[in-house]
Image (cartoon, rainbow, N blue to C red; front, side, top):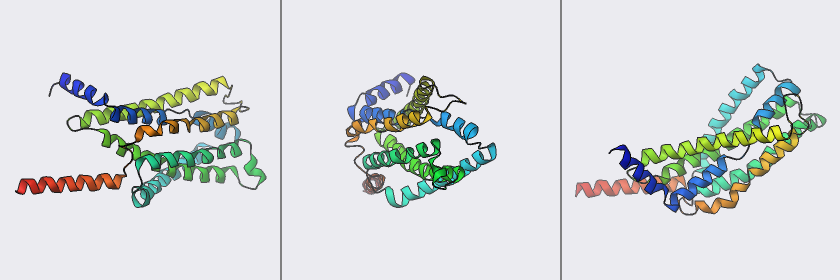
Length: 237
């Protein structure tokens, strides 16, 4: 198949509402702004975390993500993709607001050291992030019609990665607009709140996942297994 035919097939697929609407939702869901850069400066400059502790956080996050994968495969894959994305976003909102406690140093007032607070918060958010991310891969694979599976899946993943970049850039713009720098954290709490609040707005468009996102990964696997058995039986006849 030549390149022109592949492009034409890809365009015909993307034009279908059952494909471009879920793809647009994934873009909106992934492109919400983030305050990670400013928060990293806060942890190093204000809280005094060094490279060793930051590396420890990364290791713990990795194990926490694996735990999230286990939770998803054991208990959550039976739920619909739409419900998983909805509820993971809802639960992430109050958890994300815990950063306000760290920024205001309120955790110290109740006897929780900064290190333990950050580690606990990171463990939960990393696991939840993995639980939320895995259904997007299933959804992207589900959207791909026969004949353009590889090209369309690669396109959807590119859209997903591009959306992450957009979110980072919007977060950087907000950081600059609020005057948050590596030494000025006066508006960091406001920045964190805005970023967490905007994570909810994609839910306004959750209806775009009706149909393709209303099934669970387990149901998809069962459908594929049944289809494979049908094909084998037909070949045997």
